[in-house]
Length: 162
Image (cartoon, rainbow, N blue to C red; front, top):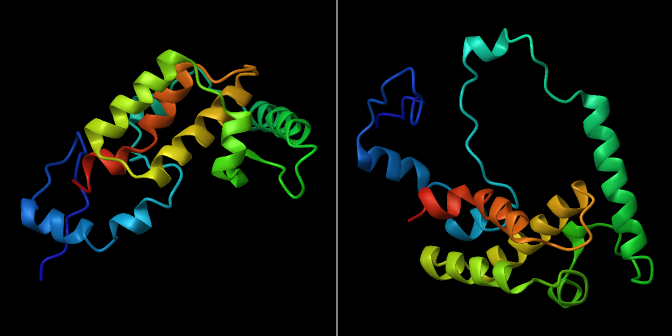
């Protein structure tokens, strides 16, 4: 059996794999297993131009400060709930209390669920990730852009397991 070449979606190299080879390789991870992964993204190779760019991104210290601030918000939010300290641990019943969605967010999430046939587990993960994105932005409420970004982190649901 020939193994995948490793160049799928690489803009600099041609993938030599047939569709059945890619499908066979991707089928090694079951849909129910991938459904349990919160963030699912492909990470492309970084072009040389970006590696040598003079404009720096956020420093590790800046990212850590934002994460620490978001975690403090979560700790305060869940203060009255025993053993719940972060968004990732919310059960569905907690989401109803702490993750209210406006009409636009609900419409976007419903359309995504319908179009991509996502599971109830994916629905809950999208809401939890959106709550975390909102926390990182210091937003009090989940907004439609937070739902949209969280949906984009379910890449494998949409592109590889269909």
